[in-house]
Image (cartoon, rainbow, N blue to C red):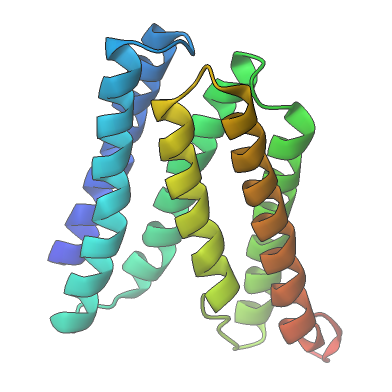
Length: 178
């Protein structure tokens, strides 16, 4: 296993710990939310670090291509699930995120079956980065409702836009003959 993949595994390992502290925080400002925020920030930073290491050391692997985006999705969705549990995030917004993730993953699977690889697009990277930053801001100010709605709006808009972009750019994967 490459160093980059080990760092990605650390991000995955942070998720249950992060969720535990989020749960203990109960969605209110306090020490548990600050610990949750610190864990989320550290886990988010590993996304940048593992990518830099993989490119710099030529450690790009199939395992890393699979695990890195999965780790990002698990981390961000874990935070959104906790906000949903507290009633701070509407379930419809989380459902949009989940539907996009399943749809893009399905599109990628169809493409792989046809010998094509769909690389991460610019809008998908913007979606991930803006979601991570937005969730950090929300965790820092969980009781400020207008911040919550700005974060939810950014998450939904970037999620929908990037999902549409993936399908528009790769529509032929669904219709080409096998």
